[in-house]
Image (cartoon, rainbow, N blue to C red; front, side, top):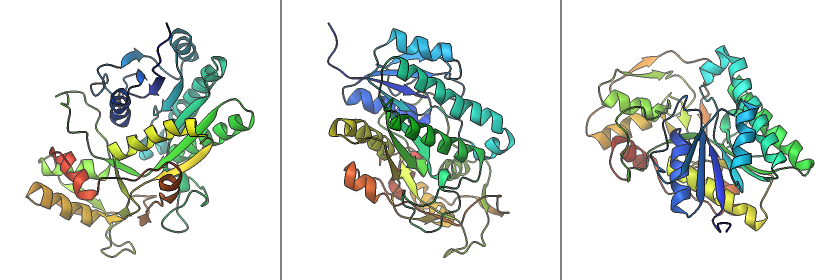
Length: 325
């Protein structure tokens, strides 16, 4: 007898964000299949009830076998290479993985008549923003292969929607941080994000000094301003997007962010207050391609998906430091 539970495939579900997403889906009553090559993650400890399948999206045979052997009603697609400097030095790797792997996934979806996909995109598609906060209708001009690979996938998804082959919701998110502190984490092998907040926490734990890359931007304190979002808020937006298909929402793009900007020094000061000790840091040169001010407008997501972030910067840092937000 066919189960009444919807079956959701989470690609990249052993990674930092994907593992949180798998756990949330299980809690929400979905049957969850995690597909991951374990190149940067570990088996989905946040979703022990999920079915785990090891495989590589870049291998078409793996994708076709996955869909042939499993009932799949919808896909949440997180699997991607995400390190911007690495994408600059290894562009073929990023296009092969992020674009080529997605093409294999979409071919398997089409052959097995799976229409729904929520795609994890990125604010990197905007490049140098013309204004802040950034809105979905603003120009898209990626500055690196990572951002360009995500934009290419968005274009492919639009083409497939016009061909009436696959429906999508693309979520462009900004700086993701925080942990779901309700669950235990493995002592070894857990995927570690590479963003500013993770590096601040490493510095607080005595693992070197934080490099503040540039303090002469045209911002209130000279350091770059960014928009941060808690990983659980991000996952909740993906869940709302998944449910949105049932409400007729499809082939849309949404920004995800708090809509508030915090400078690097704001993060350092707040982290010091949370930890009860100062963050060791030093001023370093600007990095090529870094921007002064990147803040999202999430008004569209709030209006259409009924999504509203719950966690502020201090709550994000509390969860990173090991306390419940």
